[in-house]
Length: 579
Image (cartoon, rainbow, N blue to C red; front, side, top):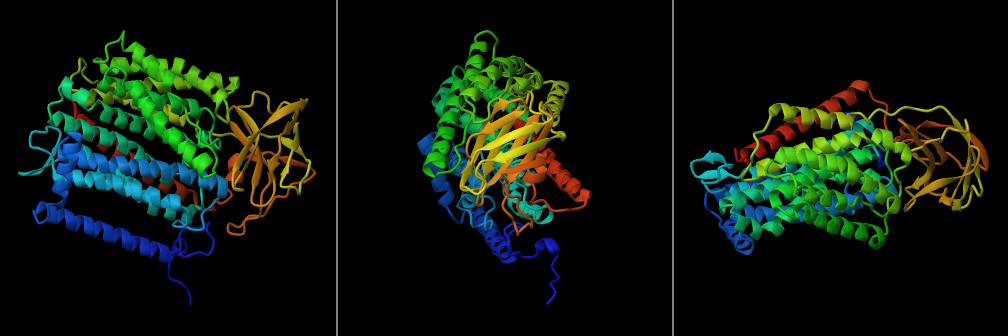
Protein backbone atom coordinates (compact mmCIF):
# COMPACT_ATOMS: atom_id res chain seq x y z
CA UNK A 1 0.00 0.00 0.00
CA UNK A 2 1.27 3.47 -0.86
CA UNK A 3 1.47 5.88 2.07
CA UNK A 4 -0.26 9.23 1.79
CA UNK A 5 1.81 10.81 4.54
CA UNK A 6 4.37 13.49 3.60
CA UNK A 7 7.91 12.00 3.44
CA UNK A 8 9.13 13.73 6.58
CA UNK A 9 6.30 12.21 8.65
CA UNK A 10 6.94 8.61 7.64
CA UNK A 11 8.12 6.24 10.37
CA UNK A 12 11.63 5.09 9.73
CA UNK A 13 13.51 2.01 10.77
CA UNK A 14 16.74 3.90 11.35
CA UNK A 15 17.36 6.36 14.18
CA UNK A 16 18.60 9.08 11.81
CA UNK A 17 15.28 10.40 10.52
CA UNK A 18 13.17 11.36 13.53
CA UNK A 19 10.75 9.47 15.72
CA UNK A 20 8.50 6.74 14.38
CA UNK A 21 4.95 7.87 13.64
CA UNK A 22 3.48 5.74 16.45
CA UNK A 23 5.85 7.39 18.94
CA UNK A 24 4.73 10.82 17.75
CA UNK A 25 1.07 9.84 18.08
CA UNK A 26 1.28 8.51 21.63
CA UNK A 27 3.53 11.35 22.78
CA UNK A 28 1.09 13.87 21.30
CA UNK A 29 -1.80 12.11 23.01
CA UNK A 30 -0.01 12.17 26.37
CA UNK A 31 0.89 15.84 25.93
CA UNK A 32 -2.66 16.78 24.98
CA UNK A 33 -4.03 14.83 27.95
CA UNK A 34 -1.69 16.66 30.33
CA UNK A 35 -2.78 20.03 28.96
CA UNK A 36 -6.47 19.11 29.29
CA UNK A 37 -5.99 17.88 32.87
CA UNK A 38 -4.05 21.03 33.82
CA UNK A 39 -6.68 23.33 32.30
CA UNK A 40 -9.51 21.40 33.95
CA UNK A 41 -7.75 21.55 37.31
CA UNK A 42 -7.13 25.26 36.83
CA UNK A 43 -10.78 25.89 36.10
CA UNK A 44 -11.83 23.93 39.18
CA UNK A 45 -9.42 25.99 41.30
CA UNK A 46 -10.65 29.32 39.97
CA UNK A 47 -14.27 28.26 40.54
CA UNK A 48 -13.44 27.26 44.12
CA UNK A 49 -14.25 23.57 43.58
CA UNK A 50 -10.85 22.43 44.87
CA UNK A 51 -8.62 23.84 47.60
CA UNK A 52 -5.64 21.60 46.91
CA UNK A 53 -3.55 24.28 45.23
CA UNK A 54 -4.44 26.82 47.92
CA UNK A 55 -3.37 24.47 50.71
CA UNK A 56 -0.10 23.63 48.95
CA UNK A 57 0.57 27.32 48.37
CA UNK A 58 -0.12 28.18 51.99
CA UNK A 59 2.25 25.44 53.15
CA UNK A 60 5.01 26.68 50.83
CA UNK A 61 4.36 30.22 52.05
CA UNK A 62 4.72 29.23 55.70
CA UNK A 63 8.01 27.45 54.97
CA UNK A 64 9.59 30.22 52.87
CA UNK A 65 7.90 33.38 54.10
CA UNK A 66 6.93 34.38 50.57
CA UNK A 67 3.31 34.80 49.47
CA UNK A 68 1.74 31.53 48.35
CA UNK A 69 1.55 32.67 44.72
CA UNK A 70 5.35 33.10 44.71
CA UNK A 71 6.40 30.37 47.16
CA UNK A 72 4.81 27.34 45.48
CA UNK A 73 5.82 28.20 41.89
CA UNK A 74 9.35 28.93 43.08
CA UNK A 75 9.63 25.50 44.70
CA UNK A 76 8.24 23.77 41.59
CA UNK A 77 10.46 25.76 39.22
CA UNK A 78 13.58 25.11 41.32
CA UNK A 79 13.01 21.34 41.24
CA UNK A 80 12.20 21.48 37.52
CA UNK A 81 15.32 23.48 36.67
CA UNK A 82 17.64 21.18 38.60
CA UNK A 83 16.08 18.20 36.83
CA UNK A 84 16.43 19.83 33.41
CA UNK A 85 20.04 20.91 34.04
CA UNK A 86 21.16 17.43 35.00
CA UNK A 87 19.21 15.88 32.11
CA UNK A 88 20.68 18.38 29.65
CA UNK A 89 24.34 17.77 30.50
CA UNK A 90 23.77 14.02 30.77
CA UNK A 91 22.12 14.03 27.34
CA UNK A 92 24.94 16.01 25.70
CA UNK A 93 27.55 13.65 27.17
CA UNK A 94 25.55 10.62 26.04
CA UNK A 95 25.44 11.84 22.45
CA UNK A 96 29.16 12.67 22.44
CA UNK A 97 30.05 9.25 23.80
CA UNK A 98 27.46 7.04 22.10
CA UNK A 99 26.10 8.92 19.10
CA UNK A 100 22.47 8.95 17.99
CA UNK A 101 19.70 7.52 20.14
CA UNK A 102 17.71 4.46 19.01
CA UNK A 103 14.74 6.83 19.34
CA UNK A 104 13.71 10.02 21.16
CA UNK A 105 12.24 8.03 24.05
CA UNK A 106 15.11 5.54 24.32
CA UNK A 107 17.34 8.02 26.16
CA UNK A 108 16.69 8.34 29.90
CA UNK A 109 18.11 11.87 29.92
CA UNK A 110 15.35 13.01 27.55
CA UNK A 111 12.72 12.24 30.18
CA UNK A 112 14.48 14.43 32.71
CA UNK A 113 14.63 17.27 30.19
CA UNK A 114 10.96 16.91 29.24
CA UNK A 115 9.79 16.73 32.86
CA UNK A 116 12.02 19.68 33.74
CA UNK A 117 10.73 21.90 30.93
CA UNK A 118 7.12 20.93 31.61
CA UNK A 119 7.74 21.71 35.28
CA UNK A 120 8.90 25.22 34.41
CA UNK A 121 5.70 25.94 32.49
CA UNK A 122 3.60 24.30 35.24
CA UNK A 123 5.31 26.42 37.89
CA UNK A 124 4.20 29.56 36.07
CA UNK A 125 0.72 28.07 35.64
CA UNK A 126 0.36 27.51 39.40
CA UNK A 127 1.48 31.08 40.09
CA UNK A 128 -1.09 32.37 37.62
CA UNK A 129 -3.86 30.26 39.15
CA UNK A 130 -3.08 31.34 42.71
CA UNK A 131 -2.98 34.99 41.63
CA UNK A 132 -1.10 37.87 43.21
CA UNK A 133 -2.42 40.39 45.67
CA UNK A 134 -4.19 43.42 44.22
CA UNK A 135 -1.45 45.58 45.71
CA UNK A 136 1.34 44.01 43.63
CA UNK A 137 1.96 46.77 41.09
CA UNK A 138 3.71 44.55 38.56
CA UNK A 139 0.88 42.00 38.34
CA UNK A 140 -1.43 41.70 35.32
CA UNK A 141 -5.16 42.21 35.88
CA UNK A 142 -7.20 39.36 34.35
CA UNK A 143 -10.42 40.24 36.17
CA UNK A 144 -11.60 42.27 39.15
CA UNK A 145 -10.49 39.50 41.49
CA UNK A 146 -7.66 37.90 39.53
CA UNK A 147 -4.22 39.48 39.30
CA UNK A 148 -1.45 37.33 37.81
CA UNK A 149 2.20 37.97 38.80
CA UNK A 150 4.28 38.89 35.78
CA UNK A 151 6.98 36.43 36.84
CA UNK A 152 4.46 33.59 36.54
CA UNK A 153 3.53 34.69 33.01
CA UNK A 154 7.20 34.82 32.03
CA UNK A 155 7.71 31.29 33.38
CA UNK A 156 4.80 30.07 31.27
CA UNK A 157 6.26 31.73 28.17
CA UNK A 158 9.80 30.40 28.70
CA UNK A 159 8.65 26.91 29.64
CA UNK A 160 6.17 26.67 26.76
CA UNK A 161 8.73 27.84 24.19
CA UNK A 162 11.22 25.29 25.50
CA UNK A 163 8.70 22.42 25.46
CA UNK A 164 7.61 23.38 21.94
CA UNK A 165 11.21 22.77 20.89
CA UNK A 166 10.75 18.99 21.26
CA UNK A 167 8.23 18.40 18.46
CA UNK A 168 9.92 21.06 16.34
CA UNK A 169 13.24 19.27 16.89
CA UNK A 170 11.83 16.05 15.49
CA UNK A 171 10.42 17.89 12.46
CA UNK A 172 13.80 19.58 11.95
CA UNK A 173 15.59 16.23 11.98
CA UNK A 174 13.13 14.76 9.50
CA UNK A 175 13.65 17.60 7.06
CA UNK A 176 17.34 18.36 7.53
CA UNK A 177 18.70 15.22 9.16
CA UNK A 178 20.37 14.89 12.55
CA UNK A 179 22.50 17.86 13.59
CA UNK A 180 25.16 16.95 16.10
CA UNK A 181 25.60 20.47 17.38
CA UNK A 182 24.15 22.07 20.48
CA UNK A 183 23.61 25.24 18.47
CA UNK A 184 20.96 23.90 16.14
CA UNK A 185 17.83 26.12 16.05
CA UNK A 186 15.53 23.84 18.00
CA UNK A 187 18.29 22.95 20.48
CA UNK A 188 18.83 26.66 21.16
CA UNK A 189 15.08 27.02 21.64
CA UNK A 190 14.97 24.28 24.29
CA UNK A 191 18.15 25.29 26.08
CA UNK A 192 17.36 28.99 25.86
CA UNK A 193 13.85 28.48 27.22
CA UNK A 194 15.19 26.80 30.34
CA UNK A 195 18.07 29.27 30.64
CA UNK A 196 15.93 32.41 30.53
CA UNK A 197 13.29 30.91 32.80
CA UNK A 198 15.80 31.49 35.61
CA UNK A 199 15.40 35.25 35.03
CA UNK A 200 11.62 34.82 35.02
CA UNK A 201 11.91 32.98 38.34
CA UNK A 202 14.02 35.81 39.75
CA UNK A 203 11.30 38.28 38.74
CA UNK A 204 8.70 36.17 40.55
CA UNK A 205 10.79 35.97 43.73
CA UNK A 206 11.33 39.74 43.73
CA UNK A 207 7.58 40.26 43.23
CA UNK A 208 6.96 38.08 46.27
CA UNK A 209 9.48 40.01 48.38
CA UNK A 210 8.01 43.34 47.27
CA UNK A 211 4.56 42.12 48.30
CA UNK A 212 6.01 41.76 51.81
CA UNK A 213 7.46 45.27 51.71
CA UNK A 214 10.96 44.82 50.18
CA UNK A 215 12.64 46.52 53.14
CA UNK A 216 16.35 46.10 53.90
CA UNK A 217 15.42 43.63 56.61
CA UNK A 218 13.26 41.59 54.23
CA UNK A 219 15.91 41.51 51.54
CA UNK A 220 18.39 40.25 54.15
CA UNK A 221 15.90 37.56 55.17
CA UNK A 222 15.51 36.31 51.60
CA UNK A 223 19.15 36.80 50.66
CA UNK A 224 19.87 33.08 50.41
CA UNK A 225 16.86 32.45 48.18
CA UNK A 226 17.84 35.30 45.86
CA UNK A 227 21.47 34.18 45.79
CA UNK A 228 20.33 30.75 44.62
CA UNK A 229 18.17 32.27 41.89
CA UNK A 230 21.02 34.58 40.81
CA UNK A 231 23.32 31.57 40.65
CA UNK A 232 20.71 29.71 38.62
CA UNK A 233 20.64 32.65 36.19
CA UNK A 234 24.42 32.34 35.79
CA UNK A 235 24.06 28.60 35.16
CA UNK A 236 21.37 29.30 32.57
CA UNK A 237 23.24 31.91 30.55
CA UNK A 238 26.33 29.68 30.58
CA UNK A 239 24.51 26.66 29.10
CA UNK A 240 25.33 27.37 25.45
CA UNK A 241 29.04 27.09 26.25
CA UNK A 242 28.61 23.32 26.58
CA UNK A 243 30.31 22.53 23.25
CA UNK A 244 33.47 24.13 24.65
CA UNK A 245 32.96 22.65 28.11
CA UNK A 246 32.92 19.18 26.55
CA UNK A 247 35.76 20.09 24.13
CA UNK A 248 33.78 19.28 20.99
CA UNK A 249 33.19 22.74 19.49
CA UNK A 250 32.06 23.05 15.89
CA UNK A 251 32.38 26.82 15.88
CA UNK A 252 35.32 29.16 16.14
CA UNK A 253 37.17 29.21 19.46
CA UNK A 254 36.60 32.98 19.59
CA UNK A 255 33.06 32.22 20.71
CA UNK A 256 34.32 30.82 24.00
CA UNK A 257 35.80 34.01 25.52
CA UNK A 258 32.97 36.07 24.01
CA UNK A 259 30.30 33.87 25.59
CA UNK A 260 32.18 33.72 28.90
CA UNK A 261 32.47 37.52 29.14
CA UNK A 262 28.86 38.02 28.11
CA UNK A 263 27.52 35.42 30.55
CA UNK A 264 29.57 36.66 33.50
CA UNK A 265 28.62 40.30 33.01
CA UNK A 266 24.92 39.71 32.31
CA UNK A 267 24.43 37.52 35.39
CA UNK A 268 26.88 38.85 38.00
CA UNK A 269 26.10 42.55 37.62
CA UNK A 270 22.42 42.22 38.64
CA UNK A 271 23.46 39.79 41.38
CA UNK A 272 25.66 42.47 42.97
CA UNK A 273 23.09 45.21 42.40
CA UNK A 274 20.15 43.32 43.85
CA UNK A 275 21.82 41.31 46.62
CA UNK A 276 24.30 43.92 47.78
CA UNK A 277 27.75 43.16 49.14
CA UNK A 278 28.90 39.66 48.32
CA UNK A 279 26.02 39.08 45.87
CA UNK A 280 28.23 38.30 42.88
CA UNK A 281 30.35 35.87 44.91
CA UNK A 282 27.23 34.16 46.27
CA UNK A 283 25.92 33.62 42.73
CA UNK A 284 29.25 32.14 41.64
CA UNK A 285 29.28 29.90 44.71
CA UNK A 286 25.96 28.33 43.74
CA UNK A 287 27.10 28.03 40.11
CA UNK A 288 30.23 26.14 41.13
CA UNK A 289 28.30 23.90 43.53
CA UNK A 290 25.71 22.82 40.95
CA UNK A 291 28.08 22.52 38.01
CA UNK A 292 30.60 20.66 40.16
CA UNK A 293 27.99 18.12 41.29
CA UNK A 294 26.69 17.68 37.72
CA UNK A 295 30.25 17.17 36.42
CA UNK A 296 30.88 14.56 39.11
CA UNK A 297 27.64 12.70 38.39
CA UNK A 298 27.85 12.78 34.59
CA UNK A 299 31.59 12.07 34.44
CA UNK A 300 32.99 9.68 37.07
CA UNK A 301 29.64 8.35 38.37
CA UNK A 302 27.86 7.67 35.07
CA UNK A 303 31.10 7.09 33.19
CA UNK A 304 30.69 9.74 30.50
CA UNK A 305 33.00 12.45 29.21
CA UNK A 306 33.83 14.87 32.01
CA UNK A 307 32.12 18.25 31.87
CA UNK A 308 34.41 21.25 32.43
CA UNK A 309 33.27 24.75 33.33
CA UNK A 310 34.58 28.29 33.87
CA UNK A 311 35.35 29.57 37.37
CA UNK A 312 33.93 33.13 37.26
CA UNK A 313 35.58 33.76 40.66
CA UNK A 314 37.93 36.53 39.52
CA UNK A 315 35.09 38.22 37.66
CA UNK A 316 32.96 38.19 40.82
CA UNK A 317 35.81 39.52 42.97
CA UNK A 318 36.48 42.32 40.46
CA UNK A 319 32.80 43.32 40.54
CA UNK A 320 32.73 43.28 44.34
CA UNK A 321 35.85 45.47 44.54
CA UNK A 322 34.50 47.89 41.94
CA UNK A 323 31.33 48.31 44.00
CA UNK A 324 33.49 49.88 46.70
CA UNK A 325 34.35 52.73 44.32
CA UNK A 326 31.39 52.99 41.90
CA UNK A 327 27.93 53.15 43.44
CA UNK A 328 25.83 50.14 42.30
CA UNK A 329 22.73 52.33 42.67
CA UNK A 330 23.83 53.89 39.37
CA UNK A 331 23.10 50.52 37.86
CA UNK A 332 23.83 51.01 34.17
CA UNK A 333 27.04 52.99 34.73
CA UNK A 334 28.12 50.41 37.29
CA UNK A 335 27.34 47.60 34.84
CA UNK A 336 29.47 49.16 32.09
CA UNK A 337 32.52 49.40 34.37
CA UNK A 338 31.92 45.84 35.60
CA UNK A 339 31.75 44.62 32.02
CA UNK A 340 35.07 46.25 31.25
CA UNK A 341 36.69 44.41 34.16
CA UNK A 342 35.06 41.14 33.16
CA UNK A 343 36.32 41.51 29.58
CA UNK A 344 39.90 42.23 30.69
CA UNK A 345 40.87 41.01 34.17
CA UNK A 346 38.24 38.27 34.19
CA UNK A 347 39.18 37.10 30.72
CA UNK A 348 42.86 36.87 31.68
CA UNK A 349 41.88 34.69 34.64
CA UNK A 350 39.79 32.40 32.45
CA UNK A 351 42.70 32.14 30.02
CA UNK A 352 44.87 30.87 32.89
CA UNK A 353 42.10 28.51 34.00
CA UNK A 354 41.83 27.11 30.46
CA UNK A 355 45.49 26.04 30.72
CA UNK A 356 44.96 24.51 34.15
CA UNK A 357 41.83 22.42 33.61
CA UNK A 358 40.05 22.87 30.29
CA UNK A 359 40.80 20.16 27.73
CA UNK A 360 41.22 22.73 24.97
CA UNK A 361 43.23 25.69 26.28
CA UNK A 362 43.27 29.16 24.73
CA UNK A 363 46.47 29.69 22.72
CA UNK A 364 48.22 33.03 22.33
CA UNK A 365 47.05 33.18 18.70
CA UNK A 366 43.51 33.75 19.97
CA UNK A 367 44.26 37.06 21.63
CA UNK A 368 44.01 39.63 18.81
CA UNK A 369 40.45 38.54 18.02
CA UNK A 370 39.67 37.85 21.68
CA UNK A 371 39.54 41.62 22.23
CA UNK A 372 35.98 41.23 20.98
CA UNK A 373 35.29 39.77 24.42
CA UNK A 374 35.94 43.22 25.90
CA UNK A 375 33.03 44.62 23.88
CA UNK A 376 30.93 41.60 24.86
CA UNK A 377 31.76 42.18 28.51
CA UNK A 378 30.85 45.88 28.42
CA UNK A 379 27.63 45.25 26.49
CA UNK A 380 26.75 42.39 28.83
CA UNK A 381 27.50 44.58 31.84
CA UNK A 382 25.20 47.32 30.58
CA UNK A 383 22.44 44.76 29.96
CA UNK A 384 23.07 43.37 33.43
CA UNK A 385 22.78 46.92 34.77
CA UNK A 386 19.39 47.33 33.10
CA UNK A 387 18.23 44.01 34.58
CA UNK A 388 19.54 44.98 38.01
CA UNK A 389 17.80 48.34 37.77
CA UNK A 390 14.42 46.78 37.04
CA UNK A 391 14.82 44.32 39.91
CA UNK A 392 15.87 47.06 42.32
CA UNK A 393 13.55 49.19 44.38
CA UNK A 394 15.69 52.31 44.04
CA UNK A 395 17.73 53.85 41.25
CA UNK A 396 19.60 57.07 40.48
CA UNK A 397 19.44 56.57 36.71
CA UNK A 398 16.82 57.01 34.05
CA UNK A 399 17.08 54.41 31.29
CA UNK A 400 18.11 55.46 27.81
CA UNK A 401 16.35 53.71 24.93
CA UNK A 402 19.21 54.66 22.65
CA UNK A 403 21.70 53.03 25.02
CA UNK A 404 19.50 49.94 25.32
CA UNK A 405 19.23 49.65 21.54
CA UNK A 406 22.98 50.16 21.12
CA UNK A 407 23.66 47.49 23.73
CA UNK A 408 21.44 45.02 21.90
CA UNK A 409 23.18 45.77 18.60
CA UNK A 410 26.61 45.33 20.22
CA UNK A 411 25.64 41.94 21.68
CA UNK A 412 24.28 40.75 18.33
CA UNK A 413 27.46 41.97 16.61
CA UNK A 414 29.62 40.04 19.11
CA UNK A 415 27.67 36.86 18.38
CA UNK A 416 27.53 37.30 14.60
CA UNK A 417 31.17 38.28 13.96
CA UNK A 418 32.64 34.82 14.81
CA UNK A 419 29.99 32.93 12.81
CA UNK A 420 31.63 32.83 9.35
CA UNK A 421 33.87 29.79 8.96
CA UNK A 422 36.32 29.60 6.07
CA UNK A 423 37.92 26.61 4.45
CA UNK A 424 41.64 25.97 4.08
CA UNK A 425 43.54 24.16 1.34
CA UNK A 426 46.11 21.58 2.39
CA UNK A 427 46.82 17.91 2.81
CA UNK A 428 47.91 15.59 5.58
CA UNK A 429 49.98 12.44 5.21
CA UNK A 430 48.77 10.06 7.92
CA UNK A 431 50.83 7.21 9.32
CA UNK A 432 48.74 5.04 11.63
CA UNK A 433 50.91 2.74 13.72
CA UNK A 434 48.31 -0.02 14.16
CA UNK A 435 45.33 0.60 11.86
CA UNK A 436 43.40 -2.50 12.97
CA UNK A 437 44.08 -2.18 16.70
CA UNK A 438 41.60 -0.68 19.19
CA UNK A 439 44.02 2.20 19.80
CA UNK A 440 46.89 3.61 17.79
CA UNK A 441 49.25 6.54 17.57
CA UNK A 442 49.07 8.76 14.51
CA UNK A 443 51.93 10.60 12.80
CA UNK A 444 50.91 13.58 10.68
CA UNK A 445 52.91 15.40 8.01
CA UNK A 446 51.31 18.57 6.69
CA UNK A 447 51.49 20.07 3.24
CA UNK A 448 52.27 22.94 3.29
CA UNK A 449 54.41 22.45 6.36
CA UNK A 450 53.31 25.70 8.01
CA UNK A 451 49.60 24.91 7.73
CA UNK A 452 49.18 24.60 11.51
CA UNK A 453 51.23 27.66 12.39
CA UNK A 454 49.38 29.78 14.98
CA UNK A 455 46.64 27.13 15.14
CA UNK A 456 43.84 27.76 17.62
CA UNK A 457 43.43 24.03 17.95
CA UNK A 458 45.19 21.15 16.23
CA UNK A 459 44.36 17.72 17.59
CA UNK A 460 43.01 14.27 16.97
CA UNK A 461 39.44 14.04 18.21
CA UNK A 462 37.71 10.69 18.68
CA UNK A 463 34.16 10.20 19.95
CA UNK A 464 31.02 8.02 19.86
CA UNK A 465 32.80 4.85 20.91
CA UNK A 466 31.56 4.83 24.53
CA UNK A 467 33.69 7.87 25.31
CA UNK A 468 35.61 10.75 23.78
CA UNK A 469 39.28 11.61 23.40
CA UNK A 470 40.91 14.91 22.47
CA UNK A 471 44.58 14.16 21.83
CA UNK A 472 46.91 17.10 21.22
CA UNK A 473 49.58 16.78 18.52
CA UNK A 474 53.22 17.23 19.47
CA UNK A 475 55.64 18.59 16.83
CA UNK A 476 58.36 16.10 15.87
CA UNK A 477 59.83 17.90 12.87
CA UNK A 478 59.17 20.54 10.24
CA UNK A 479 55.44 20.15 9.54
CA UNK A 480 55.41 16.75 11.28
CA UNK A 481 53.42 15.88 14.41
CA UNK A 482 52.59 12.82 16.49
CA UNK A 483 49.58 12.11 18.65
CA UNK A 484 49.20 9.98 21.75
CA UNK A 485 47.17 6.79 21.40
CA UNK A 486 43.61 7.32 20.15
CA UNK A 487 40.86 4.76 19.44
CA UNK A 488 40.34 4.09 15.72
CA UNK A 489 38.15 1.00 15.55
CA UNK A 490 34.59 -0.30 16.08
CA UNK A 491 32.08 2.54 16.50
CA UNK A 492 34.65 5.25 17.17
CA UNK A 493 34.97 8.24 14.85
CA UNK A 494 38.42 9.84 14.66
CA UNK A 495 39.35 13.09 12.91
CA UNK A 496 42.40 15.26 12.56
CA UNK A 497 40.99 18.72 13.33
CA UNK A 498 42.62 22.07 12.59
CA UNK A 499 41.36 25.53 13.46
CA UNK A 500 43.42 28.51 12.31
CA UNK A 501 42.15 32.12 12.23
CA UNK A 502 38.63 31.80 10.77
CA UNK A 503 39.08 28.37 9.17
CA UNK A 504 38.03 25.02 10.67
CA UNK A 505 38.99 21.97 8.62
CA UNK A 506 39.47 18.27 9.21
CA UNK A 507 40.82 15.05 7.77
CA UNK A 508 39.07 11.76 8.54
CA UNK A 509 41.31 9.14 10.13
CA UNK A 510 38.65 6.53 10.77
CA UNK A 511 34.86 6.62 10.33
CA UNK A 512 32.60 3.56 10.58
CA UNK A 513 30.02 3.03 7.87
CA UNK A 514 26.57 4.40 8.70
CA UNK A 515 23.83 2.69 6.66
CA UNK A 516 21.08 4.74 8.33
CA UNK A 517 22.20 8.00 6.67
CA UNK A 518 23.61 6.35 4.48
CA UNK A 519 27.34 7.13 4.57
CA UNK A 520 30.33 4.94 3.68
CA UNK A 521 33.07 4.22 6.16
CA UNK A 522 36.60 5.59 6.02
CA UNK A 523 39.23 3.04 7.01
CA UNK A 524 42.41 3.83 8.91
CA UNK A 525 45.41 3.20 6.66
CA UNK A 526 49.08 2.62 7.54
CA UNK A 527 50.09 5.35 5.08
CA UNK A 528 47.64 7.62 3.30
CA UNK A 529 47.43 11.21 2.09
CA UNK A 530 44.10 12.97 2.49
CA UNK A 531 42.90 16.50 1.76
CA UNK A 532 41.57 18.80 4.44
CA UNK A 533 37.86 19.49 4.01
CA UNK A 534 35.48 21.75 5.97
CA UNK A 535 35.08 20.32 9.44
CA UNK A 536 31.27 20.34 9.33
CA UNK A 537 31.23 18.34 6.11
CA UNK A 538 32.37 15.36 8.19
CA UNK A 539 30.70 16.17 11.50
CA UNK A 540 27.33 16.83 9.87
CA UNK A 541 27.33 13.98 7.42
CA UNK A 542 23.86 13.09 8.74
CA UNK A 543 22.55 16.28 7.09
CA UNK A 544 20.10 15.81 4.23
CA UNK A 545 20.07 17.60 0.91
CA UNK A 546 17.24 20.13 1.10
CA UNK A 547 16.37 23.31 -0.79
CA UNK A 548 18.19 26.34 0.63
CA UNK A 549 14.95 28.15 1.36
CA UNK A 550 13.93 25.38 3.81
CA UNK A 551 16.79 26.37 6.07
CA UNK A 552 16.05 30.08 5.64
CA UNK A 553 12.44 29.53 6.67
CA UNK A 554 13.52 27.41 9.65
CA UNK A 555 15.91 30.01 11.00
CA UNK A 556 13.40 32.80 10.29
CA UNK A 557 10.80 31.02 12.43
CA UNK A 558 13.34 30.61 15.23
CA UNK A 559 14.29 34.29 14.88
CA UNK A 560 10.65 35.31 15.18
CA UNK A 561 10.23 33.16 18.29
CA UNK A 562 13.35 34.70 19.83
CA UNK A 563 12.16 38.25 19.07
CA UNK A 564 8.77 37.65 20.68
CA UNK A 565 10.47 35.90 23.59
CA UNK A 566 12.99 38.69 24.26
CA UNK A 567 10.29 41.34 23.85
CA UNK A 568 8.13 39.53 26.40
CA UNK A 569 10.98 39.33 28.91
CA UNK A 570 11.77 43.00 28.35
CA UNK A 571 8.12 43.91 28.86
CA UNK A 572 8.01 41.87 32.07
CA UNK A 573 11.16 43.50 33.43
CA UNK A 574 9.83 46.96 32.61
CA UNK A 575 6.76 46.23 34.73
CA UNK A 576 9.17 45.65 37.61
CA UNK A 577 10.84 49.05 37.14
CA UNK A 578 10.97 51.31 40.18
CA UNK A 579 10.58 54.35 37.87
